[in-house]
Structures are given as C-alpha cells and as structure tokens.
Image (cartoon, rainbow, N blue to C red; front, side, top):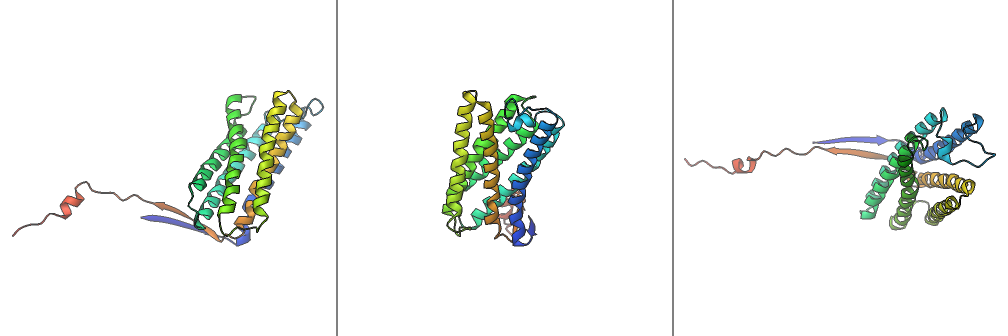
Amino acid sequence: MIFKSFLVVDMWAWALLPIFLTIWGTVGIWIVYIIAVYNGSVSVGESFPFISTCGSYPPQSCIFAQILNVGAMLVIWIIVIRFQQIRDYGCHSHVNSVGLAMGFLCALGTSLVGNFQQSNQLETHLVGAFLAFIIGVVYFWIQTYLTYRVQPRHGGCWIGPLRFILTLCATALIIIMIVFYTKQMKSASAICEWILAMVLFVLFGLFCVDFWFLEGHFFHVRKRRVVIPNEIQLSTVTLSL
C-alpha cells in the first residue's frame, strides 16, 4: 500500500521558500542584536558581540531560539526538496545523499544553537555552532559540485561561479574567525561570524533560482508487505486424489 500526497502551487511560489528563510534569519538575528543592545545585555562600546552572546539572555533568548527553530525547519524543507529535485533530473550520485545528510546536520546544529545558549550549556552550544557553520559550509560545497553535475542548470552560467565564490568566502571567514579568536581579537572574530551568517543565508536564498521551476512535489510512504512465514510452502502444496 502506498500513501501519496502531492502539493501543487504556482511555480514562482516555490522560489519564495528559500527567500523567506533568508529574510527570516537575517532580520531575526538583527532584531535580537537590537534588543540585546537596547536592554544592556551586550555593550558594543566594549567589544562587538557574537551572535550567540546577543541571544544568551532573556528576553531575547526566547526570540533567538524561536527564530532558529523555525529557520531549522525551513532548512530541512529546502534541502529535502533540493535533494529530490537533483534526483528527478537523473543525478543519482551518492554525493547528493551525503549532501542531504549534511543538510540535516546543519539544521540540527541551528536548532541546538538556539535552544542551548552559551551561558547555560556551552558544550552543546559549541557542537551546534560546529554543525551549523562548518557542516553548513560543507553542504554548500557539495551543492556547488552538484550544480555543475545537474542538467538543466537553472540560472545559466552565473549560478555555479556565484555559489563557488560565496562558499569560498564562507570557508575563508570560518578560518579567519578562528584565527582572530585564538589571538584574542574577539570583536574582529565576532564581525566575521556575522558576515558568515549573512553569506550562509544568501546561499540558501540562491535556491530560489532552482525552485522557480518547480510545480510541486510528492511525498511517498510505502507500507511494508507482511509475509506469512509458511506462505510459499502452503501455496505449493498439491493434493493427490
């Protein structure tokens, strides 16, 4: 038995999904920053704060968690659609499956960052940050590779180089951020983190180019057939008269 659900919307509407994630995440974390500065949770005069520092204290910690939880849900939705889109274009590479797994880990890390603030559970928060940022960048390196493997390549000749440049920038920002942090240049490191987050949101937003050509997507659930242990033997028994 197979259960099917088929969701159909206008082609342009699917392109709004990654755009909404970009806007949601970008506006959301800057709102958290503004609240943190306004209520004195962080002091910009002393040093520029990390994103997580702004979202560590109430009331903005609750908003921060909700923003990242919704963002993680949208990430999962987007990466699943992108995975199936690549398969439907005839690319059944294992790289696509690895990309799906990396995307899930990135979404998990995003949720962990929001729900386990660094002031309450630093170890779990750092694990989440690793998954969200570093594994997230790995995911987009995979997507850059698949962009050149999949035909048709939506966006023409510019989408591949743009993904490559943005992913390269994200990789460089991670390295520079870590170097600055080890040298106790925390303000510079925090600025790199904010730029990195913006770059990742833009990379997710670029999926709007690919999703513009979607008309809908299927969700399948296949029920496993129950086999009676002696079914084969019973079906071959004959009676002699």
